[in-house]
Every structure is written in C-alpha cells, then in structure tokens.
Length: 191
Image (cartoon, rainbow, N blue to C red; front, side, top):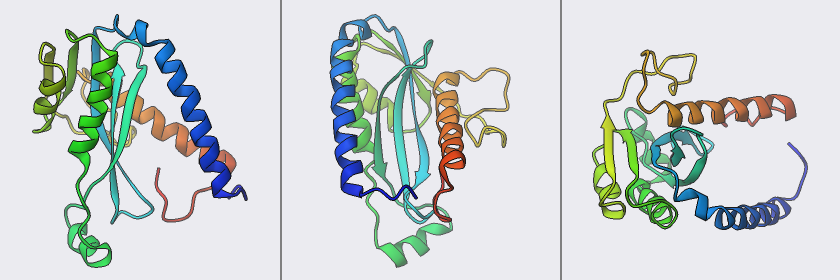
C-alpha cells in the first residue's frame, strides 16, 4: 500500500521500540504507585481467520495506560479448526507462554501488592499468582459484547473490566480509521 521496503519498516520498528523501552525504564519508578491493573486477551487474525492470534494486554484501571502486551499464535476453533489444520497444519497455542512473558515484565515494573482484574479464563489465575503472589486478584464473569463495540463494549450498565475492554475497542477503531484514511488493507486482512 505505501510502496516502502519491508526492511525499512522493520528497522524503523526496532528503532521506535528502543525509544519506547527507554521511556518505560525512565518512568519505571512511577509505575510502582499504580494500585490496580486490568488485563485480558483480544483475538484477531494473521491474514486469514484460519490463523488466529491472541493479544494479551495489561492496562492501568484509572488512566488506561498500557503497561505491556504480547501477541501469540493460537489454533483456530469451532468450525474453522478442521479447515485450518488441513490447510496450515497443527497451529501451536502460545497464549499461556505469551501471558507468562507479559507478567514476567509486569512483575519487575509494578508493586507486588497490586489489585489485578480480568475475566474468568481458566489459566489466568495460575499465571497471575506465580508472578504476583501477594496481589488481590478479581476475576469477573464475562458478558455478551454489543455489536457497536465489536465485541469489546458490553451491553451491561457496569462492566468491571471496562478499562481493558474500552482500550481494545479504541485500538480496533483507530486501526480501522487509519486504514480508511491511508488506504484499505488487503481484502482478507481484518483489524
């Protein structure tokens, strides 16, 4: 779309990643004062629905500041699982490894006595407890998403993990808006 060499884009991403890492280290002392974070996973795709990805992200509850995220491959589910295995082979599930990597970083940044909220995914509690044994962990029952929020904004009046769900919804909206302004993504790409 932009007619630039992918190597140049890769170098720019590494350069910008280094700048972000420096800023994160500079502000690390301020992160200890954060007393409540929320985390969850967003599911998206890698050029086709047969190759789903999971994006684990942690944000501060009050400011919605993103503390970290990890992108992990996962196998297709439902009616697409068989088609995916036939076309691309068995796809590894790296979600738990990505979440462990994210919480390893968070454990160095945040206070051990923090409050952590998420939905009721079965393996979340074990991962959180291994990195934050003193933390107060709140897991909330998930609610059905509304069409307007593309599954991230909930139909209920009170969403206990609103900050992370709203951050995911805003990321989706801003990416879609960016594609609209700068040219549409390839037909099979979904943001």
